[in-house]
Image (cartoon, rainbow, N blue to C red; front, side):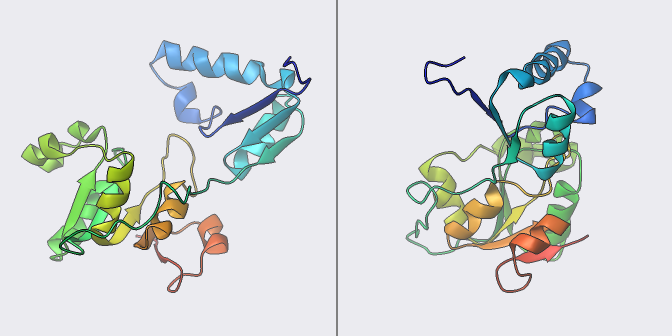
Length: 201
């Protein structure tokens, strides 16, 4: 219990993810087990995705509420480069063995230049030697990298059962076209074709 008498939790991961529950990482399973068992202790619980409101309620959490992701204007803003837009597209994010690399590969095969920044791409064998060249983009470099492309891709983590991500709010704030996986939530958040470009396959 905090000194002000109000204890609040917020977690942008999905502690109820089936993939976490099946993980071979014992530390990870224990971490989420302890976290979910402690939810009833908090007076307020904020969650990242609508699915988790029901999950938290079933775990005995009091008053779980949805807190959508957001962008920070001082951190996420256009950074014009000396040469303007260097790439057609960019993806900034971690690697998962899902549709993200096949989508990037399809764009590249069509002659569209897409640059990758992020972590975990060493686990993508299809990239070959390029894997060693991929670096994370954090802080001001994140805005610089995104601003260097005409469009920025957004994919959602299957580990976290995501149907949107913080980047769908950050990328447009950098004045770069958002090209993102279509979900019912994204259809509600953005007008397809004018505020973002959404794709299904």
